[in-house]
Amino acid sequence: MEKIKMTTPLVEMDGDEMTRILWQWIKDILICPFVDLKSEYYDLGLVERDKTDDKVTMDSALATLKYGVAVKCATITPNNQRVEEYNLKKMYKSPNGTIRAVLDGTVFRAPILVDGISPYIPTWKKPIVIARHAYGDIYKAVDGKAGKGQAKLVYTDKDGNEVSELIHDFNGDGIVCAMHNTDKSIESFARSCFNYALDVKLPLWFSTKDTISKIYDGNFKRIFAKVYEEEYKQKFEQAGIEYMYTLIDDVVARIVRSEGGILWACKNYDGDVMSDMVATAYGSLAMMTSVLVSPQGIYEYEAAHGTVTRHYYKYIKGEQTSTNPVATIFAWSGAMKKRGELDGLSDLTEFGENLEKATIETIESGEMTGDLVGLFKKQGVTPKKLNSKEFLQAIASRLEKIYA
Image 1 (tube, rainbow, N blue to C red):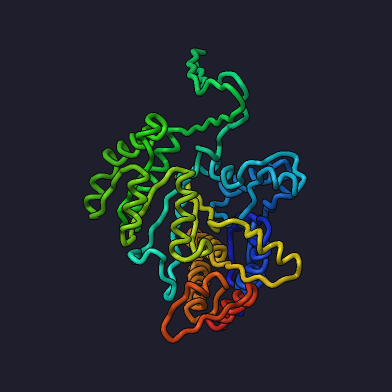
Image 2 (image 1 turned 120 degrees about the vertical axis):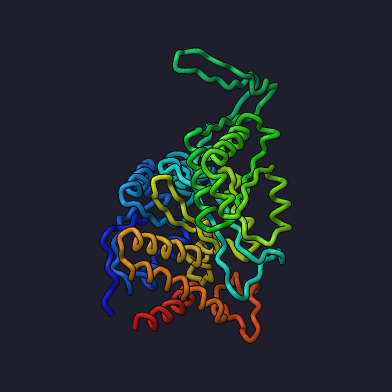
């Protein structure tokens, strides 16, 4: 077959450990045999980030602004143990946090539903989509150790006036952390959530803890309410969907009792945690899509899970692994569909749709990775555990029939 053409490159961000291995296999088995792939490649593996003093991460974010669509592999955010393991110059910040700060967008995460895999929460009949604010909070925090003495929060305005507030009077060793956000970013987050809710016709629930964080979380609540009342209330009423604000502990209780079919907007850290909870409850962390959407219409697709360290160390010992690549496949398919949509290449968009269809059909036919075998229950179908490469080849065989 003649390969599907691309006119504008994707920004390709490679990653770490087992997901880096899967990344190359997906390209070799599922992408390059069918698509004349054009990508601007950036190695965001921890070794290269250390080598470039993390400049490569910023370069990849700026390239995403230039080309409009990126696809990203899972990457390591180093802790003390990783600094020693990789002999790093320093403890680098989250590459996702760096990229999200540049794009100033919102991360939307939704479960990949498959016939035969039922959610652990039986009332969930529809997808629960997590909208995660992609700027600030703990991901851009400044933290450090403290000893006996006073820690203060100090703000100096443009005229040099200073306001100081005591954080804590330490009698011994401790730790401190300072976070920030901006009204501009919160407003962008709010509009992205309201627009997405209208696009997919889902009610929007937004949650913080403003009863405790009266100024910080209270500002999120105030801005969302203002943007809704001034710009979206009438549109929501016409669409027949609701906007609701409540405390995050209340939303957690409501979500568990719901049937799904909700867009749940969360602050940065809340969205990070809750998206993993939702994904696992639907079946697997590897069965969730994730896309960062900026207010300017920039898109970055990624897998919502980590680098699968345990499987990687089995792999480098020469052992077979059955690592689930579905979320990474859907990152590639999402980027292909969006690139095709933006460039007017219907065959590229169709390829992304066919790749997703072939992946789901492979699982529904009973061929899957080990994490899904115990979850799969479909009358007349006996699940078969495949290793990672065998699973990709099973998907490829379905694509080959489509493009024969």
